Image (cartoon, rainbow over all chains, first blue to last red; front, side):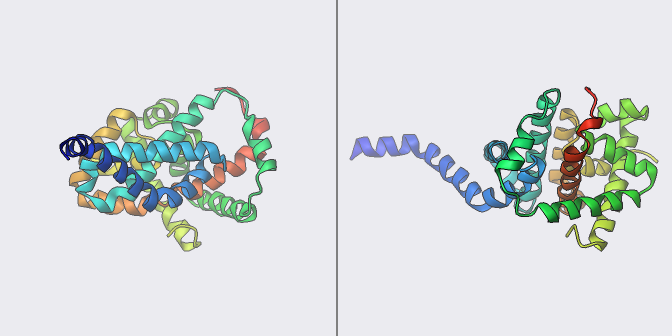
Length: 182
Length: 67
């Protein structure tokens, strides 16, 4: 059937693309959603939007990512984090209307674990040098980029990056000793 | 200490590089095996930090000032 064949070839790339996004969802959808929910304060709707946007971006970058398949998971986590940070910055000036209601409406089975984890992380941060603690605080924990944090701290961006590098490595080591990071 | 392109890996893992640096580091990452290994290790750190942030946002709302 010539028409059928014509249609098939015309839609071939679209079909392949859809399959690729489906594959990404199947393989990474659930674990990614679990990570992202932590970052969105358990806001499920927001987390699902972030996962979708992340996987669409992954699909757009598929050519590049397929060369380094081992990097895909780390890449997805970074992209998802950037989307969450952007979203939080946009919401930043608004009062937090969602979270308290959401916390009451949705049971959080791991609430106690999370509180414990938060305590362990707070303790781990106290073990770092003040310089290392400061850059972690002024970047990730305040939703600021490197350049913004550099301006606030009055130090060059390169210094923020290298302090963050050694600080995050040190933090990982302490968290690992306490069984929090793998 | 001189800044090294490898040091951007932590900021990249946290998602806090400014756009231009983010793209530049991603290009570097595709070529640098050392950074690829480090990224896999460091990408587990932000999760625990999220737990801390959430804990704080629940208890420290009063301290928030507009920014």
